[in-house]
Image (cartoon, rainbow, N blue to C red; front, side, top):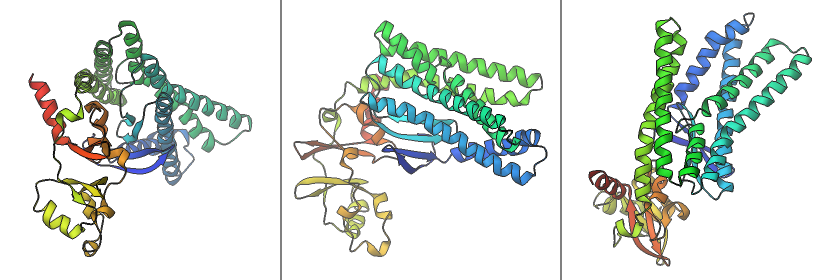
Length: 373
């Protein structure tokens, strides 16, 4: 999704938490700025080593707050019957990736508002702890980080509540417009235009600030560019999703499907199927039933000297909830499974039998044909 690799670091409430490689850049920049600019001013009597240590702790606490913010979205979505495929930390913060869009404006409103509301709660807790520590006459080494986290969570809440899609406030706006117009596509278009206007406004603030010598405002320009770019593509993405919701897997799946038996060795998979075959992934079948999906990357998870004894069944992606769907399921419901970090294909199964397969290439061709129409 973000152009560079993401990897899973754990699960919370059953939801995978991923870190995108780009996140390390922003973590370093936040920690560097805190240790070289903010903390030397606020804690001038402390050494640079102490500044670096506190900056790392503050940065970790800040991103933990971002994770909590995103999990608030995801848990409200789960309560509304939606599934979050994963939460990803990346260069501009975090994002909860849902397997499908909410079907009702009320649910979208609750989901969107949950994140900023949680940030406000975290900010309130921070100010409460700050008041308690102040009453105890705690040192600035404790007061400064707590004060920073209280204000940064307040800032996150306020920024995310700006009424421009795809910010949380933009999703709140979309839900209200959706409830009024009963047209999600029209609501997305208006909310996206608001997002573009906000982005252009932030860029304008950055330009004026730089001309007046306030270099720090250049971050407003970066955020404005990012916001306007996302808002500009959001409507087109929603158009495509709406059209994909009308297409069933049965209408685009490849059939019959070339599959492999579970007892096939990895050696034979490499020689006869991946090197000598036409496909990069194969369904794995045992006693006539689908048990998973195997791809070339699966072989790389095993040492080369084990390929002659390990089987396709051992290496198959066996989480059937991730790789199996019914023929009547629509394409929009499987998009997250076809991302580079996912299985890359969906097996279409009807009454326990393998009916077809839908790959990333199939959906790309479908979207391409839609764009040409």
